[in-house]
Length: 437
Image 1 (tube, rainbow, N blue to C red):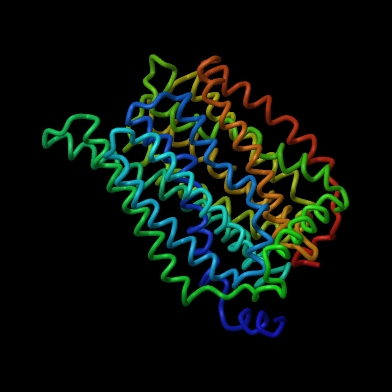
Image 2 (tube, one colour):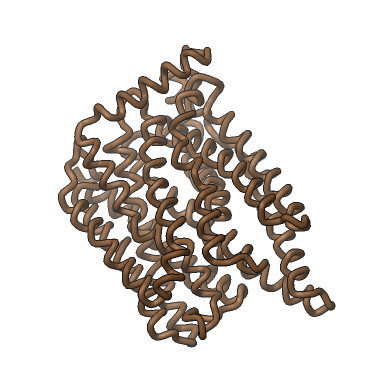
């Protein structure tokens, strides 16, 4: 198996598959976590319901470690990557059709819940391929590409395709469609595009993706359950593990609160404390201002970490990641109408997000995951990370309704303080080796 992995490293350039793999990973998560909020807002669902249900269906990303050992004993990691990409694409096609049903909200949420399971399974296998195929040095080298294209999916979805939904809405409205019907038709087309993108990516990865190692020797359900027990036990025996869990939860705490509320805040009318933007404006700001800032931040962070090492850069990454959330507090208090002020705020926030997020990802890969159950332990760690985001997201709609957008975003800034403290003190189990050593 080691010879097979070495051969695949030599024959397949990481740039052939890392960007497309993590773009495919980002699409389901972003659609369910962010784009769905705009979709349901257009279709008349309340903020509290949107924040609660679109957060609740993210549960599979929290508990994905439960089935991660089974992916190590059946088939290759590539098999699960390709299968889940195709499955998620088909499910988005079903979600497009479900918008036309009388109980569209319940049915679409149910379909999205299955997409979440498929997407979480894809994440386990994709990260397994990344860690199996790349050396520690290459993981740091390409972490910027990974983060850039994962979040490029966010910008394509929340930027380009949300803009396109607004463009289609105006077109359908112009030919006499009622407001609700025009939104249903426009979002049907957009979900169909997500379907096509994931199916095409699945077909591409049949040839472009390395295997990521073969199946383990164990093949029975009992062996899988025994493996799960072993994985969980070994995880909690890791050095500094409870400190690491606190770090993982707190690093993204502020982001968890704002993730669901930002698109709702941008769309809400000014009388309600929002900015009163249309879908096209939101798409324009994310797809132009945000896209360039985010990609630049992600790529610079990857090379910055590779050059100096994670230990020396982690606190800086945390600061750059969390401080820009204050942008939304400023936007909520001053409610600017200038596209340059709003776009400039999004540039600051997205550059910081792109630059800082890769630090947490690499920390989990290099400090939490190493060992016999590397893929499963990374899935466990990232699942705990998503638990924090999910729970804060579920509560965020009720809190923003209770506090108003102005007070809510100020409270989020207070919630970032523990992240700075724990990042400053977090110990390292393994030495990282920057390229200049």
